[in-house]
Image (spheres, rainbow, N blue to C red):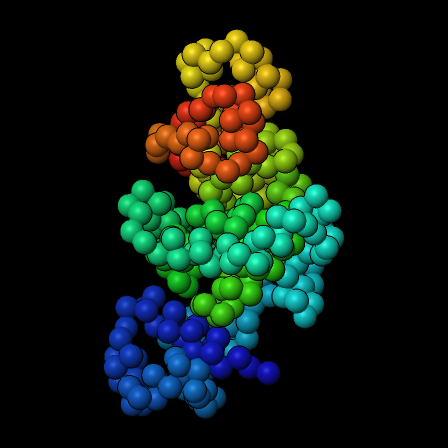
Length: 324
């Protein structure tokens, strides 16, 4: 069955890409502006002759107008089934994550974080606009309850084609429930997998958006970067953001705190530049985006810092890496 709402959103998207108003499209087709409005609102579908005209104008197949694309099958070979989520991990949350997953559901983390991203945030809005300006398939890895850069990309371009990923099946399903209700976009897809071992075909993704996923991943960050390089198309871009503790900050800490942090969390002292080069990226542009302190955070590293009586300063950066 044709989803009229999704059909209307596709017509609206293609029309705007052509730089046409509803009135201009109506004049081109010889129909009223009200007819075009009805299509785009999901209240009607044009007859076959008009569908052919739209197909020629937009340079797409009629099926691309009428049917939702099974993008996940194209890039993974996996059928999503009735859930419309591609699961490459068990659908049940990992035991140690159950309490956290319940908090996400019961305390409306997704909605609260989304509403926060609707406020003006010049630096994040700029990153979202940069990612949104890229054509093709965007993969948001390790979205988490904050969504990474994805909310800012959709803020810049609600029609963006994005695969929303996380290792947690709860995160992925909760984002789907929320975004289906909020945007009902035909261009959003959902997949639960470990981005250190992506079930994606080589050269299948145009942009990888990483608003902190790699920096916070449970696996080897170097593997995540190598996987990002593998699945990106030639000319594709990885835009990543994370934070690290500088050597100067480390040296200023009490000796015992230094020893424990280096033993338990050596990863927080890495800026991942060398790993990014070793992954294959040769064109890398890094920009310091700010600073944050563990006293203002609720992460596991913040808990460790508080237990040691220190307030760690993290230097945050945004890095754009191109696969040549």
